[in-house]
Image (tube, rainbow over all chains, first blue to last red; front, side, top):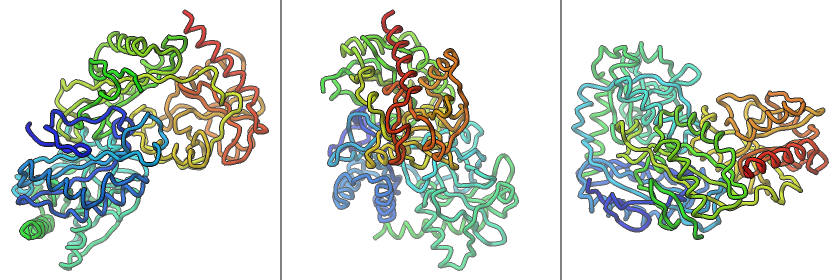
Length: 285
Length: 285
């Protein structure tokens, strides 16, 4: 591991990238994060990520660590120093270093800003050809899931349950319906219509979700924003998920039962192709 | 600030006490913690804290960072190096350092163990003479509040709301009843009986709560374990809270309305006196 990691103004070798044990990110999980795709050496969909980060910060009254211009310069400098061609930039902003006290620290306490990169094949991801398995797990999260916070223990437990069951993702369920994936948005397709839960405080406003729904509308693909049950998902024509690192990913099994005949379905494949084309275009400009 | 802080086997000056940005405590809030009182240079009620820590670790399948004997030696060494006479030891165990992935890291990845001390007057706390104010806030937490995890953003927001309102604590409410305080257990007294919510996944199993209820039983003080509403609390004869750092603390105002005539009530004062006597005895042995 020889990555360069950004920590509060300095670029470190990753083994030297450290934060104070008094950082509120470490003590309280008092922070928010984003994951932004990189393609052909270009950070793509950055505007969506910054918009969501700005919203997350605002919802918990946390200050930007620097101007948005400086913020973007750091991300680009980090990408360049790591010579990252394809993968993602991960970034995290926390409420800074202070004596441990639940209430916010004194005004003017600078927010912490940490970022690193990871190489990953986004386009030629072999999973896209086979599809992935998901299992359902109880949704244990807090009530403000619309904030992309680093309070992620419930998601870790969900993802570990999925991994233990040999699945790629955990679909979290609550009150009989699927809320979303542990780190992805969840969709089914029935009679040609995409079904996915409407935005609320119960789910994260996924960037891929936003773009996929926009693409669906533009291409005349029917779309229903409502919750769906596990039984509905099992009886669906297709299922798929989306996230910054999987883009659009067909789901071929739920709780061990095949969906869509156990093969990636045509709607998911079409959306993935459209999505890939769109971000390739963005990366080329 | 000249404290000595323990981080994974080494005692650092606090400004040098750092963890990797890849520590799962920093990235996911994937960790648990305890706060243990220190009195007359002695760590008190350590057994209760270790028992609860062991339960928290078990519930999220996290390994102890070392043997419990070694763990206790660290806490004592830390207290001694800081020459702490009265206050508390704070300790935190996280799922260690690994490439960011929600699922648990490879078996054998060592847990991180960080601890520090803080001086605080536990016995001669001036707030005990005046009592404290609380305000009610919505309980936004996750569904496993019985685990003392560092996913504490909801509690930070609750405590900040309280601080902004000039209150000492936020009493979190859900479905019309008080669950507990942001960092304390909540009680009212009516017609001589202590009323506090029964243990479940909805509240933290407070150590002070456990000891207070035991003292109440031993001293023939009536006790009802059930939720109470804010209206009930406002109409109660007394209210109080408990935690590692406040021990037993009278509540004299809820949402700006006086409780118990705005003065510490006799049951809260009696329980505090009994509690102080008990831990002073423990510290003396």
